[in-house]
Each structure stands twice: as C-alpha cells, then as structure tokens.
Amino acid sequence: MDNLKWIAGTVFIAGFLIYWYAFNEGGSDSNSIALAFRSALSSMEMFASHSDLLEVPEDLHHDPFYMTIFSVIHFLAVIVSAVFIIKLLGFRFISWVRLCAANLSRKKKCRLFIFWGVNDNAILLANSIRKKAAEPKGKYTNTDAGNDIIQYFPKHPVTGETGWVPFEFTITENPVSGFIVNPNLTTDTPDVPTFNEDWEPTESNPVKAIRGELVQKSNQQTKILTKGEALGGNTAMRIWFATYKSEGATVPTGYNFKAHDDNKNNWFRGFYTPDVVKVAGDKSKIGAGTANKKSNEIVHFFEDSKLNEKYFISYVDFNADAGTLLNKAGTFTFIFESLPNSGTAYPKFENGFTCPINVIVQE
Image 1 (spheres, rainbow, N blue to C red):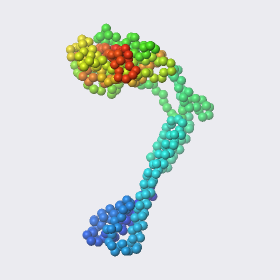
Image 2 (image 1 turned 180 degrees about the horizontal axis):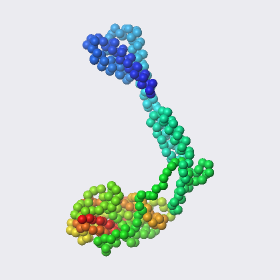
Image 3 (image 1 turned 60 degrees about the horizontal axis):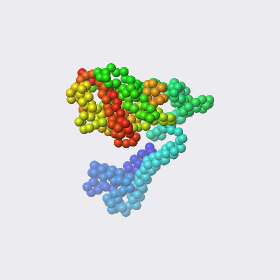
Image 4 (image 1 turned 135 degrees about the horizontal axis):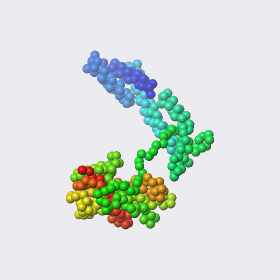
C-alpha cells in the first residue's frame, strides 16, 4: 500500500501537468487559479476511468506525442485504482475466508487475537503469543469439594497431570453473596412472617415462593423508601423461588404467573390495598408489575451449600410500580399474591401462591 501511494501521487501530478498544458488557453490563459482547479479536477477524474479529452484543444488531438502521454497516464490511473480495490476488498475477503475456515476447524473454543495491519511489531507479538500459549503457567487448585472441575482443564504436556492451564489467573472469592432463606428482620408487622416457613419444594409441589424485597436496579442494593414519597422508577420487586432438583436436572423449570390485580378496586398489582392501608396509613399503596413472569428468570445459589444440592434457587424481577407510596416509617412485611393459573404461558402455578415482601421505609 505504501508503494501504491507514491505511484498514485506521481500519476496524479503527471495528469495535472498534461491538463495544465492543454487548458492554458481562452479564459484560463495565464489564470493560475482557474488552471489549477480545472487541472486538479480532471486529474482526479482519471482514477475513476474518466477523461476530459473533449475539453482538450482540437489541435492536440492530432499531436501523436501529446496523445501518447495522455493515454499512458490515464491507463496508469485506472490500473492504480484497480489495484487499490483488489488489495482492499480482496485481502479482506481472503481474511474472512481464512477466519471462517479456522472457526470450522477448531474443535474447542480458544482466544482469538486480531491484528489490524501486519508489520514487524505485529509479527513479533504474534510469535510471542504463540510461544507463551504452549507453556503451562499454573495449576488450578480446587477448593470446592462439591464441584470437581479440574477434570475439565487441560493436561500438562509432559506429565499428563490434569488441571494445568496455558494462562495466568487469580482465584478470588465470589463478590455476589449467596441467598439466605431467613432475612432475620425485626419488623413492625410481627404477625406476618418475613419469609414462607413452608418454603421447601417437593417432587409433588416442585416450586415455592420464599420471600421478596425491593431492589435498586442500578446497584442491586435494597431500596429504602421515604415516608410519604412515591417510589419512582429504576426499582425492581424481586421474588425468590426454590425449585425441586430432580435427578439429572441442571436448570430449574420456569413456572409462569402474574400479579393479582382487579383494576385498583381492592387488589393492586399483587397486593390487597386495604391491608396495606391498615399497616402503612391512609392512601398508601404498593404494587408490582403487570407482565407475565417466569420463576426461573435468574438462577442464583444458596449460601448453604447443602441446600444447593437439594434445590435450585432463582428470582424474578418485576418493575415495581412507580406510584408505590407508604405513609408510615418502619420495616413492614406485605403479602404478594398470584392467583391459580394466572400465567399466560405454560407451565403455570396451578395453585397460585403468596409471598412475603419486606419493605423498609425511612422518615
């Protein structure tokens, strides 16, 4: 490409000069500005396989020397354009074909390095990556007895020992905490449990709601309301579900449901408004969304590893109603309800369910 730039520049200058010579008459006679613009424009048009021969004086049409130079320069301009297009599109097409072939031939997924341009530094880097990729850097040590994942790591090329990997890595503790069934909250509604005590699913009753809370979508932290102020947006009402783990199952079945709603007469998006008013004051209300939801929207993990062996834990997020408003400060538990077979897809919660939702309101 570098050589092509010099060649194209030389051809452009040559074209500029032959048109300058031809256009130096009439209104352009000794007019450097007009000559420069006309000559430059005609010279650029050469690369698009166009010539301004009709604008060249008639006497030069019969000059063998001028026409020979004129023809050669235009031919070279077209050749330069053709070579540029072939290099630009041809190389990209060849690279695409090679990449597709490499993807089809790879038996296992691997890291792909893309170099934008080939030069000495790029070649040195590619050779370095290739050399280091073949060198085992460290051995993974499994600290979780319940998950034997070492068997899935490559073997050492010399000893054959499983667990060696061709890259350096650091093992850190999972920053996301596991789910705890009992939130251990002290509430201002002591008669209402903060979680469903009969939450453990069985083979005959394979999914149960455990509890729920309001969560800020931006940072996944508990959303705390302010007394007398509407909730606003960007808040999820999260409901947790436990699903029975049948033999061989790797993911929980998703059961469909909707919030109980009767157009604000008594039930508002999952909650019985008269009960909410009794607890949180006149004109208080709380609501989830109206969409159909599936119990396995996000699969999580229990803090207790023994529970992970027996059940799946998952949660679903509603967009909490922006008009949610509570007129008393405190920590409250409200009951969310979903009617039997309320979902719009299968499978459904045939018997419906209720779920405690814990809410904190500050002054």
